[in-house]
Length: 214
Image (cartoon, rainbow, N blue to C red; front, top):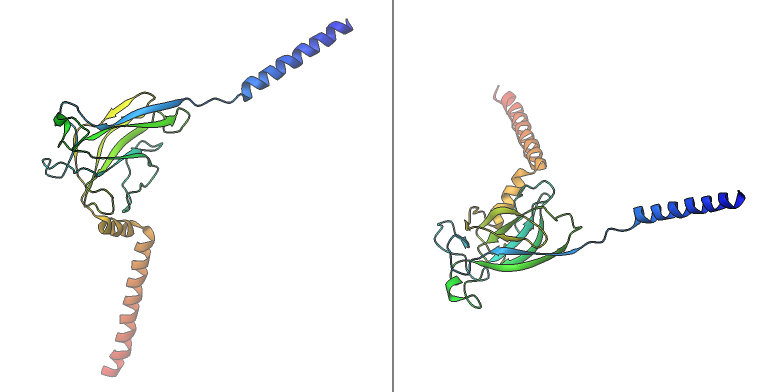
């Protein structure tokens, strides 16, 4: 009886250790790859990036960014330097190419050739909403406009071939900075206090001047 009890206790201990081991075992991330761009080897004009007139293509070397829209899945505006705001995250960068090594049929179309983005399936952006932001210069600081593509989903082995889009937003870096400053709640308070002080100064000046007139 005593021996059987010891065996039972040993079995329970082994099962307990196995349970703890299974629960605490790490979940290994799986390497994943994702193709992104705006491209058609046959030269279809339903792909590529264009200026505001929807006729002029972006030039070779113009900046393209693959961006995760963050947990909320919404596109947030850029910073003047080409960064992101809100919960958006830049995952990868590429550029427009209108020449070689593209086949002749795919040249001069404002295409962003396909590029592979690698990530782990345990990364938070897996199965998240992504989009491409293009700038009409090789750097955001040198651009006069930017435009966002439609959105897609980042998946293991997936592809996002963004349909043709145009530069829709025209503010340059200086204007963007002005907009950012105007949008800050603290600035409204500063301007309000400054206005109040100006009114007080005028009132004091009138009070001093008026008795002298009387």
